[in-house]
Image (cartoon, rainbow, N blue to C red; front, side, top):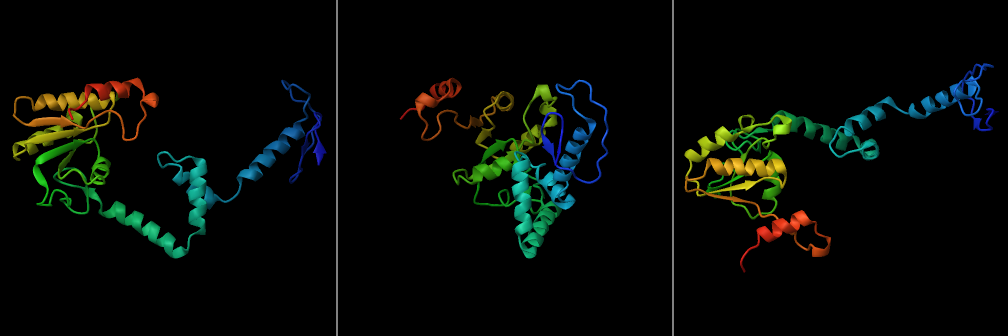
Length: 243
């Protein structure tokens, strides 16, 4: 070990050139060689494996995944049997190769028409409009909706430069004209953009005789009034139902 003027030791790694000059601007006089040693140590600590670092960087690109979670995923892959790794890579490749948008509703599908649109047992007079294809999967998990879907491919957001012409609203109008729809359910997030989209679409069908509804907003199941925010309570009071 070598001591710098402040008294902190640094491990000597490799060849080190000792200079007698002092750095300007430091709180204490610090010799150049101590700074060089810290850089060498930092570089040695980060130089683990370029393959592992590359996989960690790829996992970190996933939404909501930080460096720590990406590291856990990478080490898990490292511990997996080679057959499982091949299955994982094959599943990802097949997903990108075969998944497409349904030509009718815009949801994800393995063919030109998804299994929901081609199912004759679904209520074809009930249409649910959602923001993205993943919202269909979320609603289908409940098992409570038996109608059809239409993916809007986003919501109206003037701040982001997204207007009605940028969404799948024109195909929605054409689709409703060719169907005997008795109710349209608007299932958007409870946000400014979601509310603006709800108001715009409901206005398009005003006077057509089609019932326009939206998902209920308010208290979730098991919620405590003491810990509920004011905005949620207001929506709950406005959306109260008769029992």
